[in-house]
Length: 125
Image 1: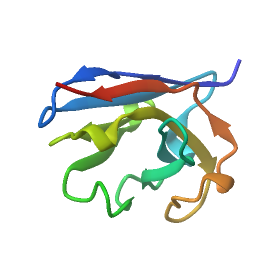
Image 2: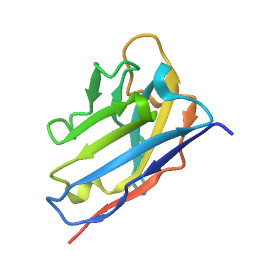
Image 3: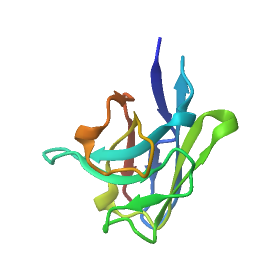
Image 4: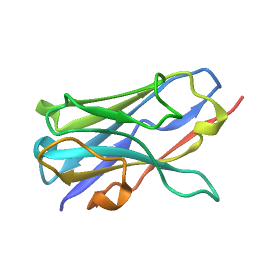
């Protein structure tokens, strides 16, 4: 079965950090661009960051730039999202998604055809 599995979510205080992981099962992520998306209650899904298949191109939403860092480990077929300086506005379900893409990556959710089930991130004191 071809799946993406997110992990690393949880409850954190404002100013804290979390690292999310996205691992593939049944296929390798090495030929895929990967994106992280989030959806808060009552809001539309938002593109947070993405990384190209080689790991040398990343893009970030303005709301997270300078606080979040995306990386990938090809040997482990896993992608990471390091989130620092978290604030309550970052509270959401975070999803990873993948698409076979030769160059670059995109924050457009409609471009991705494989999705994980999501992991909850709650930032609260």
